[in-house]
Amino acid sequence: MRGMGQITRATERGVLALFTRDVAHPASAVRLPSPVMKRLLIVEDNADLASGLRRNLEHEGHKVSVATPAADALLAVSREAPDLVVLDLGLPDRDGYHVVEQMRANGVQTPVLILSARGLESDKVKGFRLGADDYVTKPFGVVELMARIGAHLRRAARDEAPTTGGSLSDEVLTRQYGLTDRQTEVARLLARGMSNAEIAEALGLSTYTARNHTEQVLFKLGASTRARVGAILRGEA
Ligand code: CA
Image (tube, rainbow, N blue to C red):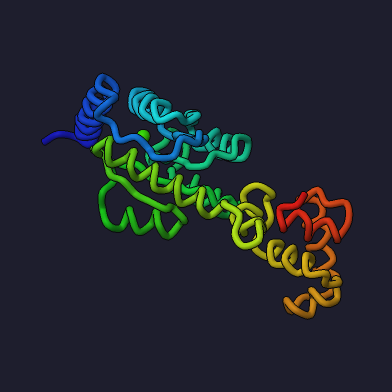
């Protein structure tokens, strides 16, 4: 009976064979319709798998970095603000679940695609419950993986696109400016010209708490005055 290590190695060889084929014949790869370069972070401790994935994504025109172990991955997420994270679960220091859990706890909404040999339904459910957006089991077809990544990037780009009247979406306020959900609500009310007392009333907060949120919103948006918040949210700043 083969041990788990052998199964994993065999799995990864299968994956590499797929990569090799697609790299050797790039015309066979599915090209993303969007020419916009995105930043991707691969968190994967198998160097061959990570570099194969990197080559495929760079071939699509993206900027790709690789981080491992989990502690480095979390640093890279905050430093590089990637548009998507491809996350392995079996990392040298911590479980990949820890990475997605920490990202979400930090308010980072970046799409996370888990790429793992763990194929049990309970593994997948745990990943989704912790905030992952997709779960692909190894071995995988590289064309399908590229298509899934493309779909997540397009969806994220749509979410970031200015909505009505050129206003910034909640997604942009969260990801680019680091506002929490509550601060996003406060920013919307500030943009409508509400005072701290009115914001406190509207959100069921103390005036003190509302003022703290307001100060955080001004700081994070780099707004010198309350009136500037409205301009920034309308995309005029
Ligand atoms: Ca691994």
